[in-house]
Length: 415
Image (cartoon, rainbow, N blue to C red; front, side):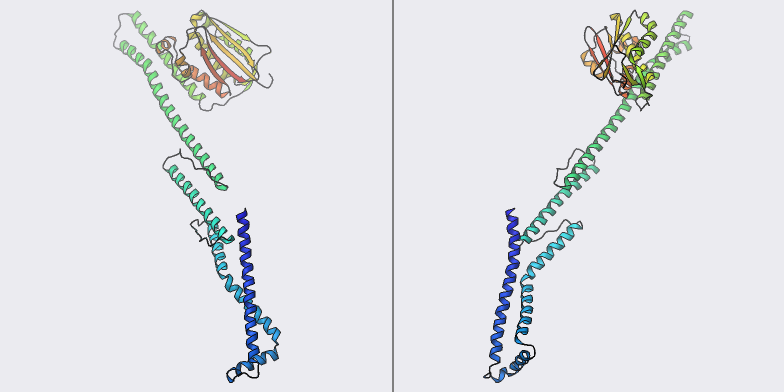
């Protein structure tokens, strides 16, 4: 701040000195001219000075000495002042031209810094600004070239002023572009994994069906009983294949933005009705299922058909893998503004290493056991997708005593 004040004072002092110097020079020249005129007007002047004497006398008689001195003084002062300030004026013109060039986008401007005055300070600041702009633009250009070559991890160093906003915007664009590319790659990898999983899981029952049909075609059976046995196995494998295709279609449908037809849903009545529909399966496996519901009824906004599919998958999973526990408990309650539904079975413990992968498609804790129970590895993945489509989430925990699948939803407006 003090340096800026000194520079401004020095510029004003410079022009003041130019003015004073011009005035002193004008007064001195006028004084010398006056003495010369007095000398020329003396009667004792030589013959050489007579022409000059005549001119001076005519000017004095026709115009007057005072007007002549004023006119000559003004002309002298103006000429001397312009002569003394011409260097400063040229320097100022250089600065003005440089500022105009910078405004037009030319950033390679460099001004000489002369002295320590205000103009020198302006030139220094302009040089500093253009240098910073060149550096910043170089970084931005380098970053953009990196994007063109596929390098999205680099970030532009934060600048000052408006360039900081530009750098931040470009960094955000880079981050979003990188995320989009990663999501696209993940989607492509998921699609490839899905195709691989489908191919593998469809091949097994299809190979078995073809094997038994070939045996029938080539009459490789002893009697009608063995024939019916082969036909029955092929039929069961075909049903497994149909179920797998249905589950795959459902999973694909749910994961591609299936529209929700939400309405107010009473979870208490909804789950009681669901359990009633599963009574034959429960009795077949020797299981009892009890629904423990809170009062008053717990209401949520949900698509009943889709949510029924999700809860059916959770109940089927509990029936398949919790039969040894002889009981399934379903509890409905709320924590604050969250509705909580738990499916609890008392079967074998799920290994801790399998819990993080349990909702992945085609994942099975025990492949041989899944084949015996008819699992496709898609049921839990479908349930998770449907629950998340409703803005909820699902978790699982397992101990030697019990396995709990817990789903959470936002309460409806009437709860």
